[in-house]
Amino acid sequence: MKSNCIFIESTFIYISGCVYGSVTYLKFSLVDFIKEKLSELMNSDTDEENPNSPIISIKKFEDIHIDPNLLKAVYAAGFNRPSKIQANALPLLLADPPLNLVAQSQSGTGKTAAFVLAMLTRVDTDLDYPQVICMCPTYELAIQTGEICAKFSQYMNKINMIFAVRGEFVPRSTQLNQQIVIGTPGKVMDWGTKYKCFDLKKIRVFILDEADTMVSTQGHRGHCLRVHRELDRSCQMIFFSATYDEKVLDFVSRMVSNPKIIRLTRDEECLDNIKQYYVMCRGEESKYTAIQNIYGGITIGQAIIFCNTRLSASWLAKKLTTDGHSVAVLSGEFDVGQRLSILDRFRAGLEKVLVATNVLSRGIDVAQVTIVVNFHMPTVAGTENPDYDTYLHRIGRTGRFGKHGIAINLINSDNDMHLSRSFETHFKKPILLLNTNDSDEVQNLEN
View 1 (cartoon, one colour):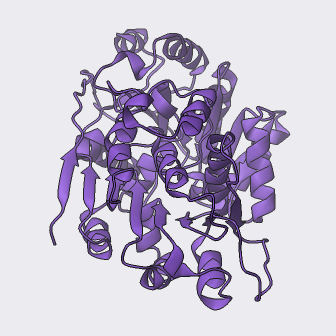
View 2 (view 1 turned 135 degrees about the horizontal axis):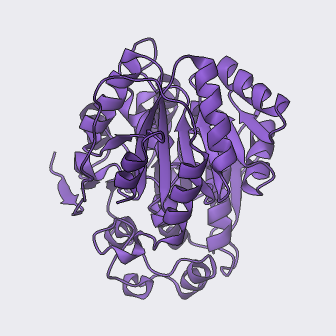
């Protein structure tokens, strides 16, 4: 199969002075460092000043020739000019005849906006049946995508959208009259193939968000393939993700006919505006002491702390709450309504810190998040091997759309150290030792 590749060029600056040395256990006085570093980062220019940044493009939205009502909504939403992924993807997405696209871009660079603009452009508002399907791996992502869709379509007449997610119900005999269906794989499959609520042959655009997990997760993969098989050959296929391994990319490329491919090189996957550090700890209580000091140092923005299990997330949140901190916890034990409510409170700033499991690692956009902490290092399920994709998605919750952010790994064992070094080598970005007992080293970091 023939496919065309576009490699987005970037220039990366490597920070020297990454020293591991002998393993020593540190006292945790991170408050002053975190305050000073966050203030320094937040008061500095965003990556919009860097011409090689993936959030920057020399093009204007007017150059892409999108609908004037869409253009008005884009500017009203606060977008000044297209990011590189938008500038590279939108001409392909809006081409006539339509082109299939498999695209990769870093977290927080505007992927969702790109495919939402594409699907709104393809809708024929004179037709009152589903024409676009957008499938997301989680309830939260589907709702977030729908909110962006509603914002961008606010000046368009007769655009209607429906969520195919848990908790939404339509009778078997119902024929949907909304042009856009946004939902999770199981519900979309049920409505389209089981209940026949809409004709899959009439779908013009089929979008997979977080496409790598959609085709690699067993349940999602089956649902996606079943829906995909029912689509007409003329349907435009759009697959987006921040990460693709070769196996997934090969599968997706066989699933999509003659796709255009926008692919990142390995050292482009992790953004330079996210500065990464590691701190040596000695047990869970030592990590907790570090968390307390980090929490006390956050005077700008918000933080997400990632744990590997529901039990540890609950333990950490309860311990922080007992000590008088305002903390939320989000894990798979909550139902979708509760998770959405927790996210809404966090976005509103009612809690400064969110303790979460990997349920929050993908796609969720909270612009105020300036720091991400890995309380536990992410590993492939059932192994002690590094989970590169999860690490990238976790730290991508900060540094959204060119803002600066900090990621801190709490190191508790030789294997944690091995994982941190593996992430550093894999993404070709430095993860620096944070030793606030050494003022010279702190000064070196600031330089």
